[in-house]
Length: 388
Image 1 (spheres, one colour):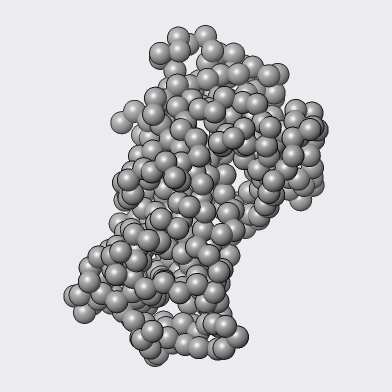
Image 2 (cartoon, rainbow, N blue to C red):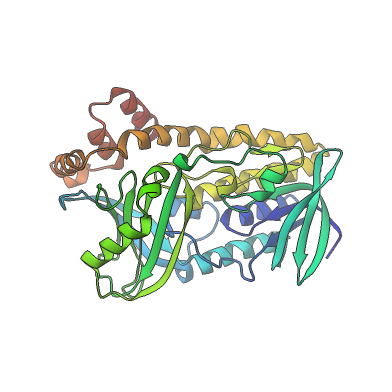
């Protein structure tokens, strides 16, 4: 390894790998550091993603596709199921394999990758980030870089060390828990979303089918709800009532940012991508595709900054992200606030009303229009996302 690089990326998730790849494609020197021993492990994700979201960056491959999805089913508190057919809409992934393949695209572009490298500090020169400190095989080391890209997750210590405000109020965090269970008898091409006070107040419950009769089953509730009753208790109740004899293969828990992008996602020598920048869709909590988009923008701009010998160019990243997805996420945030606090009776009426629409005319836009029929200001937001 060299002692200095043009760009160092901290974290080898989808956002980090795209940042490393798109920077390396500019012909600059890039190193990606991953604290775990394997890229893609452990998996902390529901693993559902749109086909368009991944196809922009990697050719779909059956080795990392667990299920092909073309239906969404929304189940109201009284059990009414409203289904939307999307065609070939998305996948449930095998994230261990998927993340590994994304990292390989970064390596193919010329990025170096080092695992088991735990970044525990930053280097500064005249107040500007100039590299990283890290522990590797029990030894403390450091590397210089012109730009550091933080892809180190929602807690983003790297961003905080650089002086960016990465704090998220607990009211804007979803308390999430998920298991992967076997012997789950659901349609393999359908994502299931449950709503209601008994399953996921202030959020939603999901079943995402995987191969071999397995499924990711979990929920996210608002931080306010999580303070009073744990997400795990809602999950345990659901499993007891619906799948009492299904073996549990894995379990994970953690916080998911359910907010708009951080106010600043770049600064002198530093850029934030993915969860670290809060590039998660605040309505769905999904962050794979949006993180990849954020990473690709950051990586390209960082590479351009090196080639132009103009490091201040990275400050254009905030605006470019905002124009690509940030504005849309702000709309999703307003729609979320209009939906997730509905009463059970309201959810029941929405499902019943939606089922009265012919199947060939059911769209996600129509669903949100049905849900927010008496909230004109939010109908304008829906038009901006789904119609205009």
